[in-house]
Length: 233
Image 1: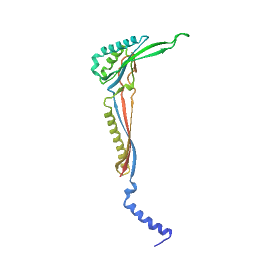
Image 2 (image 1 turned 90 degrees about the vertical axis):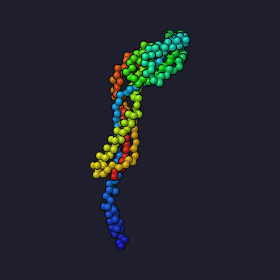
Image 3 (image 1 turned 90 degrees about the horizontal axis):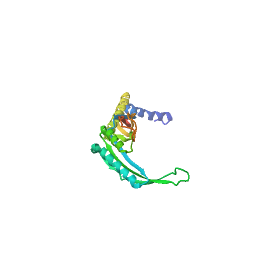
Image 4 (image 1 turned 180 degrees about the horizontal axis):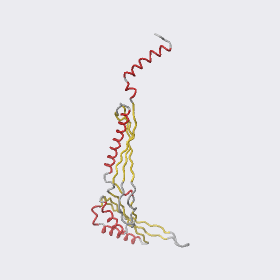
């Protein structure tokens, strides 16, 4: 047996080359990281609303009576749609005093009473939205409607649908890569998800107070991204 450097190198390297030649897949096996994306477009089918009756008066009782009258008028105006207002909540009347700045130098500051009461609910029948808004406007209720008021009654199902598309997309990418490398897409080593969404530009004007009815609702999109690591066999 040779004990010089050249002899040791030959004695060790030949068995290693033989093992690699017998198991070529071992040298090529590895992992692949892919990002899959799933998108689902939908139109909101529900809305959350809050209307407020407010009155200001130097006399606290007068302000309170004015708010109660507004709430009573609202209840009467919306009676035909009352059974469509879900999770209806009529908050307690809130009464407080605010200080007014003097109108002229040397005048004493004045105080006045402010009474306010809100009602909140969800409405699933969006075809009744404009009549409900009209009922609030006719009663003198204050409100504001923006994109955040609208939602879908089954958003969880939409998210699951987008998640399924993202997983399918990630698996398809893995299979494509593996095929190009003359390998196969194996088990998932790790997987993480992230959820997002954005409104498509809305086809409605922002509604505030007595600005008029809402004419249409814009579409939205829920997006799920999957980051996955697959084995390559």
